[in-house]
Amino acid sequence: EDNRVRTTLAKQLALYVVLYSPLQMAADLIENYDNHPAFQFILDVPVDWEETLVLNGEIGEYITIARKDRESADWYIGSITDEKGRVFEIDLAFLDEDKKYTAEIYADGPGADWESNPQSYEIRHVNVDRKSTIKIELAPGGGQAIRIRPLD
Image 1 (tube, rainbow, N blue to C red):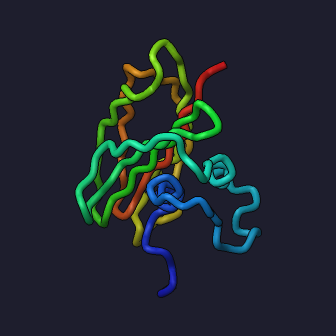
Image 2 (image 1 turned 120 degrees about the vertical axis):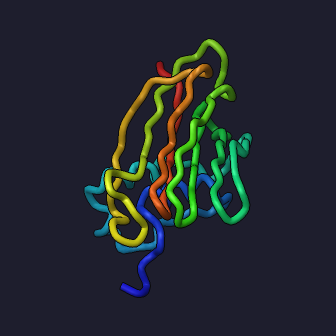
């Protein structure tokens, strides 16, 4: 219990985008990832980026970063906070004009909290374009990871 990571599961996913590292890993027993839908984000997230945008942030408090995959037209957003829950409206004006996208959102779930309920998360899909905004709700110690990919 004393060695538990002091974040929500969604924040752990968001850190794959927020922290640049060309070497990513899931540091745990594989059994802990079997049949776990959130693991899909770890499988999908690239390790190198074409472009990076800082969408908001305050040192030691919170940050939201968008990164474009070097090998595809996909964008990834990672948003994290400290022990204070927060809500942001993120403008998607950085997306290509005249394209439609789907956003796969891995978010803190109902009642999520880094201390009392770190495993609560939800996955949802919404269609977006460059005129869209996404509401990001971060639990205390939480985060949100988003993959945005063009619709075929």
